[in-house]
Amino acid sequence: TGNITKHQIDATPKSKTPQPPKNTQTWHNSISASRPGNSDKGITVLDCDDTLATSKSLIKYTTPDGTTGTLTPAEYASNYQDLLGQGYEFDFSQFNEVIGGKIDPLFQKALKMQGKFGPENMFVITARPAEAAPAIFAFVQANGLNIPLKNITGLANSTAEAKALWIADKVGEGYNDFYFADDALQNVQAVDNMLDQFDVKRKVQQAKILFS
Image (cartoon, rainbow, N blue to C red; front, side, top):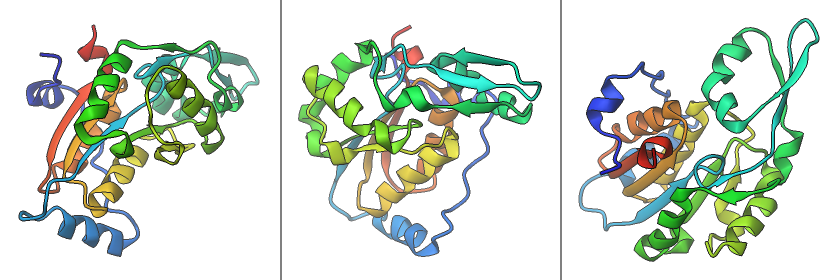
């Protein structure tokens, strides 16, 4: 089926459940907006790297002893928490562009999903910096995905918690039917854990499971 199942989520090491946003009004708005009786409002939320697209953009790193090197987005997503703990410093300057971008198989699914909730309710959230949004916009537009530029958010933050809290804000905006896809399992888990706290519909999928 391609869906990441509750069994698969439960059987893997858990990400720490994100804490409510520091803005308690935002959290209360999210709780209120997710209550039964509200009209359906659907949203599609997609990661960029190794979910919608692959690229030759690399993350540069420097170790505490001064050694330098690079990581692919997939390598970074799998190892960044351990590397941060070891004192690695990262340079995301290449992530302001989509270098040598190619579409991933999920892109084809995204093209079909434009008709479900509409492109105006389709969002890309990425660990890339905000400056990368125009390059991502140009890439998706060139390949037929009509996501508005304002719906592409560069968090400049690689933590799973950042994406989960962004999702919680969308609940506060009245969205109550979520589709979320990301290649990093820790992000899928964090978003699933966050949405489990609200009375909303959700389908969360890990891109690598979906197309492995």
